[in-house]
Image (cartoon, rainbow, N blue to C red; front, side, top):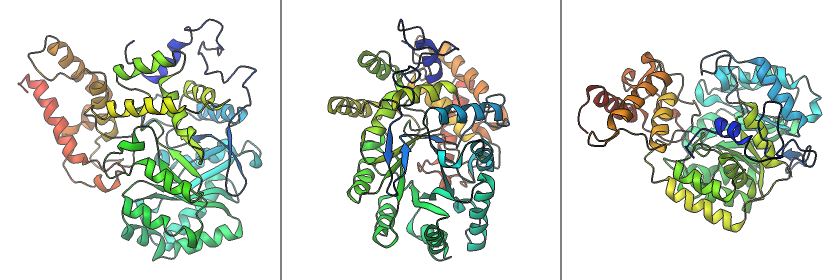
Length: 447
């Protein structure tokens, strides 16, 4: 089986099993739509007694009119997704002031306000790392979230993207009095649960976690998947350590990046074959989602679902949820060790580095490069029999994926993107490396 992407896999799988549940569009569900499982979402209980769906809807990305990054959001498609998720038991919706170019909260306010307020939980964030960190500016951002989300209380409020360092944390939340204000808001009931999302180093994590006795964190959001469990890249900490430290303090855990930016839905072909041998009627992505939900202190697993196929497949995973067995966890650890040998760039497509003031499509460039690495389609040596074919495919694919004015050769190395990257990727250096690789291909020079 070729290493096709998740959407193509789901479409192709629809004909694989006779008698399988089918949508009107011919897509086989992971049992989500059968009478036996409809409405049987897995729920976990928060510290404040909320019954939260194990599957959470992440709103960092949304369907667009033409499917490209910069196209307007397709509101009709987004509303269909939210309505469908709500009908099938999903009640946790995660957004932020900086998502979708600053439009996510407003769009979610429009989508969610069409449903009874007691049927869903809103999670949003204090995203003051991307601008003015003063108390006045941060409070303005906070109050605007209520307006955009059309609500008078926020169920889950996060200090966004903690981990750049203790000094930055103090500047964002301590020295300006912002954390004390948010604690007062929790006391007043306008914030029902207060927590933080983490990308960063162990020192920062340990420091903020040490404040738990003083501030009583209601939940914490971490990057967690079977690759990061023991093999986190960049400045990130193994999620086994993060999870176990939180669990030992009885702090519920919300999961982000269960697919590590899509990498665990589009694994190398050697890996996908092993997974399909074990569970031939399950998608590759379902392995990652089952892993994320297996750990008992996980409250919710976020997924950015821009296609109905993704939502339906995830519903199939989390309705009548089947945790990974001990043997399957060992299998996934072997898979993780195999995958870290692939020389991919650890980009999760979070878009925190965007927009680039010089127009470079950083996530798009990394996505094309990683895709070719994982599918073993890299034109490395002119001595290879298929070098000319791979060279042509790489260059044509690059031009199709990334417009000429947004390619790596337009990076000037200003380094403004580096401190924004939660994976600690040295982006300008990678841009130079990829640009040099592309130029060698164009000129037909030896490697």
